[in-house]
Length: 622
Image (tube, rainbow, N blue to C red; front, side):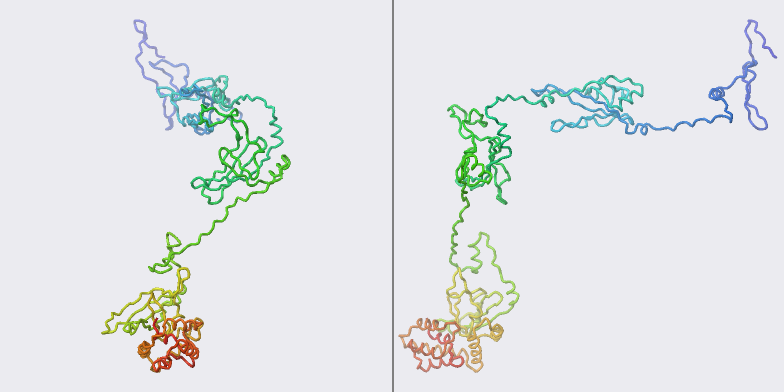
């Protein structure tokens, strides 16, 4: 053993200050050994252990029979948002709010619930919603971390307890209690909870909930007995309010209900579909109606809206309503014309009234004023002008579309001559076109060279009424009226049909049911005469000669001759028997013995013993 030299002054003199080597290698492996020499070469007599070995020895357990015991695995780490998910602390609190602009309350107590969410240390304040409170209620502070002070700290669940004040955003809340879960949680964390306090209610709200005391003087009349006896028994009257004296007034029906339980009256309106009135069912709400008032002084204001019992002398009762009488309810007269069966039985048993004859209030039908149609002025078509008499916005007359489609482009053409006392006009020839699609007539005059008359359109397409046609019963010319030899009157001018094309004869034969048989026979004979060489030009020349001859006979009355022939023609065919024709001529002193007259009669003959008197009458212009 080495000993360190002693310093002359008595202190140890150490020359070696290195630490001993504790790492050695054996067979290529590193081993750790305990140091035997300390700093300065001092001998270590106690085997020292490292801190890790000491820690390991402190955790060593007694060795079991089968070796070292296995360690318990450490518990898994659970984050806070999982451990405290849906775990909320609830505190009941209230705060006081000043009410400066109210004479009935000076402050208001508002109850709230404070929620603390453990998963993220956030808070929210919710006030239960009260219906018709007039205050913005609901969530007062949305969920967030609420600041605690000016240093950036936030409220923690350790800061919350019962019986304490908490200030959030300038408003102080008094916490009075918490729910059972909150109490168990805080006590498990070692927090001592304060005793709970009673919740303070709003004094004004509690005052409103208290029933209002009513001081009613007991009455001699037993109203309870009346209510129990006549409950749900109602008298029903059917009335009428006559408002015809006012502007736009009318008779309006109503139903009057009289409630026997409390002597109240109700007036309901009767609405009909599309009556143009707002659907307000009640005219007078159920109430006691005053009948007579106390005499008022002249100084009493007349603008009082409410009437007290002291101002009413008599109220309406069941005796004031009767069928067939008028009653005034709040200044409006109602005439009662009927009632229901229950009302009849009540009046019969209570008052002995048996007369319940209903009054007929139905409106009498107005007298129909005949519509006077003014005379036709000649402008436009008669149907179009007639629509102005029926409506302010005239509609076009309805057309026969089927007839227009069936007879489209079907035209009957005739040759007509103008019947005029002027010899030059009698020589003029016209083409008359009848359109079957719309029963219109147009007249065209073919131009003749060196005649001195400008030809062209004489009459545009229009419907031509017959002579004697009126506005109420308008009749127009039809195809059955247009036959050879017939005379038509077109707006004051008379035309005689002298010829027709072949399409007219074919149309008459195909529609024989629309034409008389005599007309068809005469039409065929007229066509035959034309084919044999007798032209209508020759007939017109002969008529001119006959007229020159008849001028010598001044006693002839042309108008009487035409009237007699028309009267004897019952069917209007324009054809008479030869014997009847000659008898008429003798009675009218017509000189049938004259050669020209006999020749004219021969040309007017159509078949055996038949004469077309219309061609003959052309020689006698009226």
